[in-house]
Image 1 (cartoon, helix red, strand yellow):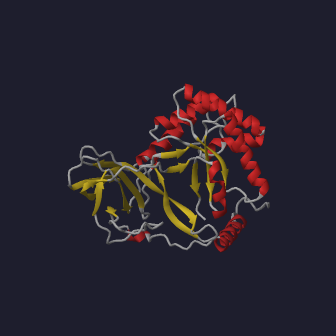
Image 2 (cartoon, rainbow, N blue to C red):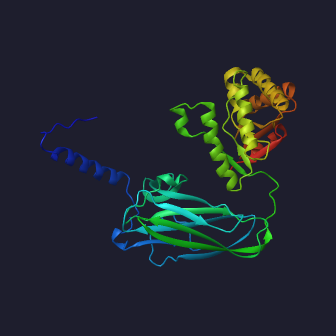
Image 3 (cartoon, rainbow, N blue to C red):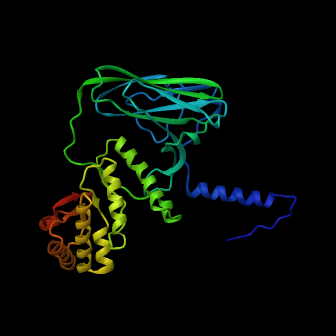
Length: 362
């Protein structure tokens, strides 16, 4: 830590320190991308990214981008189209609207400009608009800075073959501009996926700083669930409390929320067995899991897949500990379904301990 003391009438010392800090930051975290030249903004316009355009992390402005793009999609498939707005005037409350045929419910999100690492092990930064915000009331159009807008929608299963136009319109400082994605609907329907596909979903990180009420947390999680379902996700590993006797009612409430969002059970409970085993011991863990299974069944809720290990150590002590967890669950909660994440061929000998196995990458 340091302190700069300078005469009140001068900021020269502070300016020098800030200039040095910017230089040092640029040396340690070089920004490899160059922002678009603001002078290229000569009016108010909206363009579409053509189908097949690589999904660059930084969709900077190109003068040859069209106002209409065409793509193909089967019935029942999710369509995602990027647009770029570019303006020589500011608008802190640009109006956004989408027109689409009946049966289409488009969702619009806008891209936030952020600095991100190009790779996990690198310190070079890219200027990206990968972070999408769904609240259009926060959308800002700044002069000379392109703004990414993303439109997603699902092609209805009964959509007729042929052209399906979806038009995005922006009113920027009183000037209305539009761009269109024309989807050619193919005369086929995507088959249903037999197995659930989804994500491990954590609660928002700020919940660890400003603890919400359960109702507030459920509203936030329901929003995430709705977004994932709109993207076609069918499975989920929810963020769940550990089902101790005191927290079991909350566990049921969280399970009900995931079920009502339309995800396909069983849901993967990644943490509960491991947390209970570490905190209370194997026997007490199995008793709590048995109680949770009973309460879930009484409430008409699906029991989860209980994850009992993730990439277990291939040594006698680790295998013995895993066997104890399996045996305790088998004895006290014989109906409980056990899952594990494996990633080594040597784990093949452990397959009999699980009802479901997930193979981790690597």
